[in-house]
Length: 369
Image (cartoon, rainbow, N blue to C red):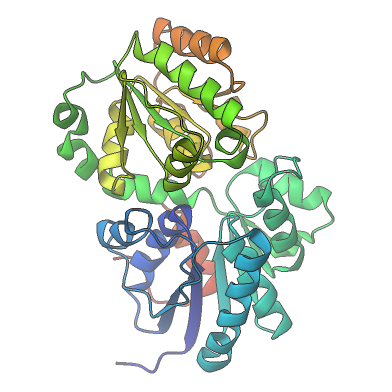
């Protein structure tokens, strides 16, 4: 076996990161000239939000777990920085790869940059232009100092250029989350989640809600539950409840309407199976906006803005206010409309990881699993 010539260190901390790491991990597993070190910060530490994704997506067990757990944004970011720095000094990677826009992304970027280690940001350039979102701050600051910026869509490239980022730092590579969808979609279809949950394909609604703007204020959360109750009077509603949301419901003393089926966070294949068979997805998740656009499933995003506008202009996504009537109207309109075939989006083709690795590890050795 030839000596490993390059060390990449991937940092992940939350469920969306795992879906972006997986395609790179699969590709790098087929190379013997690259050492790939995986660090899990433990930002998402619940087994349903973490462990099941590593096993379900066949991601190698992390080489290091920082176990930072929950806390305020400042405390969490600081904890990652304190615990990640010794790892960098020990591993001495040629490149640190960060994913998405969570606190772990920014924390790892700052540590590596201050140590003089180059940083590559997967999913760079997304902008909601809403600085009240912690993720927006993480995105802007990460992109300001990262060395290589892998953009998922042309609008992301435009955002970076408008911010004065040098063009040579930017690579348009496509959406790496779609690589994960393409890889496991057949397994998801064979899983046949609609049959397992006793719902008819195309006739039910999948719901996920977790963002602070939607679940931290009891009045907003109460309004959203009222909206879901109204939807549940017309269609089956399967609500995959984030631990944060479940805790906010409990703290506010909100009773779960009988018409809603509450589910714990699901393994990726099972969740993708539910989403692919749904008539509609109601969410505030960034990743589901992308997955539904690729799959051609109508999506209502309960937010005033999105950092993924391509899911609206070229996909199936629509923004909706966190109120009963707009949500109910949006659901009815989605089910009343004929569903069009999914429209292809540039470079959302399942080969984004290959393009990223061709930049990070150029060589004559073919990539692939």
